[in-house]
Length: 266
DNA sequence: AATGGCGCCAACCGCCGTCGG
DNA sequence: ACCGACGGCGGTTGGCGCCAT
Picture 1 (tube, protein in one colour):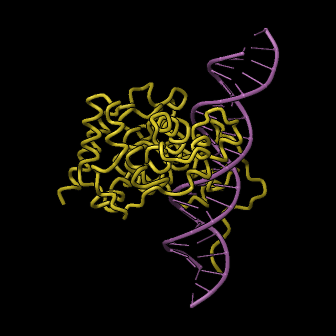
Picture 2 (spheres, protein in one colour):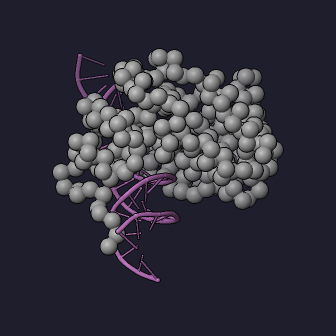
Picture 3 (cartoon, helix red, strand yellow):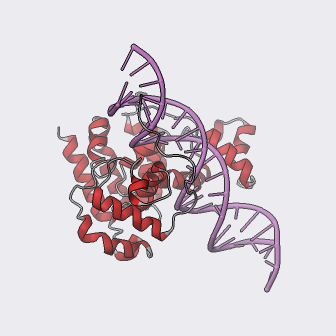
């Protein structure tokens, strides 16, 4: 009945990955591709759960990942997407090639949330904070909450989506974040943002997600030449892809715009 | 120079929808 | 049709490093 268990929890290693483990995982995926995560640890000689391997790969080892802080434009896009999609980090990440849901989630919790609060916006509802009752306001505003209590407050706050796609989210002009925040973005980035937002990608949500996901999930074969680039890429791990000029936001931007425009013409 | 607090981020946990058997 | 693993997702945590005192 059913399938075999993912992994016998006994003897499964946890915690930070070593360079050796990374090597094994990458070599395995190089040779075999991404197929069955359950089988990966065994076949790759790793004492890890398949789930852990998948996470390590998608969040850290993938060659198409960008590193470093999100740019203003990316950040702005995240804010706008969050206003529409809520905490659906994977959906948001799908709009930002080279970024992972985990990365965006972390960035949201550590940077953007604070930024929005500073600007007087509720990071959950994306509405102005002024109307909040005093006690709630204090919870959100108090930056001196100690670590533990702050985390609890944050986690409960992020629990559910401020706006669902089906709640008149197509109305870009009504997005408070877009109008309020765009003044802080430099001209070029504003243009990019406008390009990204004003194209009709909201109309064919699912189709575009699928399209963007060509890179992720199952299709790493794609155009990327693993075999040719692996050794070089692994060198990059020590320095971060950025240090090798891989931080080509312009390419990504153009790509993203082209993609959205193409999709919009359907 | 020591140390305590805080920020950041990689990784884990647990839930849920999907799908194989 | 049903059971249960798989894969994906969002929430949470632990630990390291930086900074202020």
